[in-house]
Image (cartoon, rainbow, N blue to C red; front, top):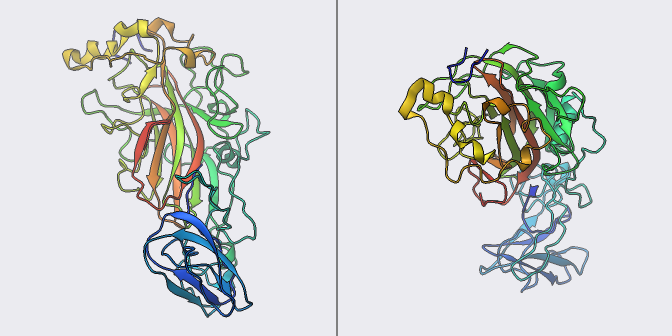
Length: 460
């Protein structure tokens, strides 16, 4: 028992702006450079091109696209270079090196971003106000970018597949498909786990699928979001609400290797308790360069137990670990502080309780404890209202939360990887924390994606 004053006992998806071509052998312009979209009309005849339209692969200054049947039309991007032809002559050859031949369902074997494993890209607005074309990048015969699938989910749903749906991971696929055409992107498996990846058959109240979090916190994508907690994932008005600062359901757990992640300026963290996670195994779209998701972290630890050995944590543990991660974790601040009350993004709290900031740390290590950030609690307490974090911890200076944050990481298109969204109580099973997770998106800009965590609406 702790005694106060003492130590404890999207899509951001911009793919190739190309029109998917027929799998019939023909000629497609394939050159260098280009940016804005335009359309052109091809010449009649076998595999010829016209000038002035750009090319179907998104590069060069070539013209339209035509096939053996006669007059054709093409679209692409106008560029500075002179296009050179890409000729599809063999239905069983993978000319663009994307892993599919025309015979296996590649509807544009001149563009590695167009194949059955790609994701359809919502049109984007160019600098001149024009809207790009709707491109069937996944070769299924229609333009169908992903849409949310999380309506109708129950608050107490503990099916891992529905947990993935709550964060907009809707499309499913299989690890070893019968045909190359079925080697699509999507969720391979999804289950609730303990922090170390051990299956958690019935997480009960530690999991909730919520349409909001109190009256002032709203979903970031679709109709619902996933909530996981070292206590109960319920607000004050819902059945099963904790009703206090601590609710322990599971007891001691095993942390992943190298966790809890210590802040070297603070007392070390020890064992973990009441750990909960959702592990999702995925195959990325072939035209993806990264992915992102949004989260928001609440803790009864804030502000009294800042820089203490009890700091609860949330991690997004990725395997294989991407470059830039910390032991596989991709959610941390600019100082590589893990998501806990030591994170630099805690700005939802009571500004009148500044005297309670790191107070317990002061009893332990004195003058080396951190000073309050400035400004202190700039977002006030509105996003605590109705959540329990506004009323269940008044005797230790209230509680606190981060703003909505976006974490992103790079991925190799078409690769298989896993993400384990996990959290726990550190040091004991008291003073619970809760994480909201929502709006998973694939990034397909074609550019470089790095591991970052930033406030929502702030440039990555």
